[in-house]
Length: 615
Image 1 (cartoon, rainbow, N blue to C red):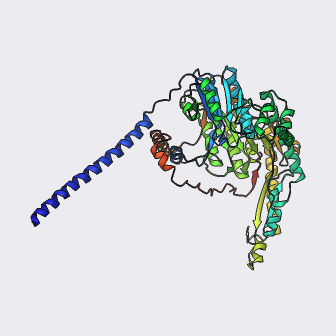
Image 2 (cartoon, rainbow, N blue to C red):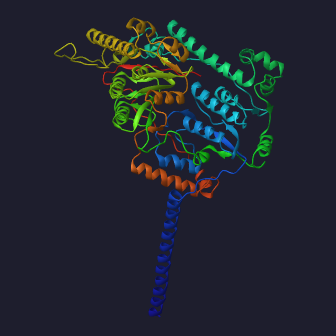
Image 3 (tube, helix red, strand yellow):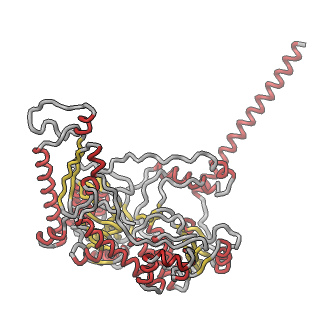
């Protein structure tokens, strides 16, 4: 009996081993099949086919930027795969322009649907560039449609370039004008017993006013009103022209909003319609039926049209030439805060930009350089390191043209001043030629709770910049003298680079901010125009007729390139709406990482920075 039980046990044991082996083999086969499918989708994916009579859905997700902030490629694609919002929501300006310009000559694309629901911040100059491309698209006999539940100010600017603007009957058009409002902390700082030592040169340099005042200074109020008015007038003129209205019509819509709403029983959608801001009020089903009539979408389709990212895979992108057999104009993007050292996209590291400039200088096929600057400045030291490399480029005989973006002020102007030519939009904010330094000390706060500091040293400076004790008179004098010297250096750089008398530069500097047209009048820029015009100008300076353009950038590491391709392939395997996506959406949302990057690390703690954000 015992031997029988042992035999039965051994049989079951053997069967168990076979089943375990089979299970392991099956798991490995499934794993290998998934890997093979990912590899196949990465290396053998077909180019999307755009059917005839298609609508290009121009989705602008997040902020419109000149250069995307660097994000881990795996994280970005995995977030897209499972439906989580990306850590950084951005749409590249050049992607938008490339898509519109290519669609204008694409017989398969008959219309563009502006999808602005998730659009974030954008500079007025960027919106103007997109609007110009939309008008070129319409000039080909094609139509642009805007259909939203409501329109913010930036969204409506783009919508004004559409042939048809549809608004949800429960929505509205929300225009308010431009404003600059800050919090001022002087009283709070005093109550916290923090002693802020502020040093600056330039009577209009307002970056540190929130620390030293309880209200806006007369100088800052005056200069801010000037450039805000200039930009707002440009906004009104552009929208009025597109909608066949007058600037006064739009101003009245805003300034008389209580009376206007009373006349339509508080119905803001009806007010927008009667004011000529929109063409029709349509519900979602009505919009879907309309789109199905003009394109190949179905009335019950959730989202109509070819997505922007899909369309971009089918076209030849501009500025991506990688060969070396053609004369080339190189583009270098300088976006973000200027700081010493190396940087990732979205910030301007002096070593990174200097390396790109050096590569352009030593390359035989690169004949000219366009530096696209979109920055409020930052470290004075880092700005000078970049400028020195620009001077070396100019010595080589290659022209350097600066193309200014939304902002190109303070330290950003420092690196621009020696360009052969400076282009800007009428809506660019530039200037802010001034510098500052701020040192907080906490001796009063410490003393208030019974903590004191004392000691002895061999010199008047032996305690250094100790934040637990007040700055000595010698240190304050030394700091101010250093700032005065750096300010004079800044003025000399501008005077030399712009071929202006020092006294004139001294008068127009003082930290004052200028909109593009005023900057042209003062001699701070050479031409008003677009980024594309700046590129053509660079080619002309180099005597080029047939040329390519390429964006110079620091390449991704092999690891990041591999992750980018594999994760993109994985995303293709699990389309939206799959079981995997449905399951993963129930997981807790991931928390954004705290950004601990120290933006301000000038070795001398001296900054040429313009902290402006208007809305």
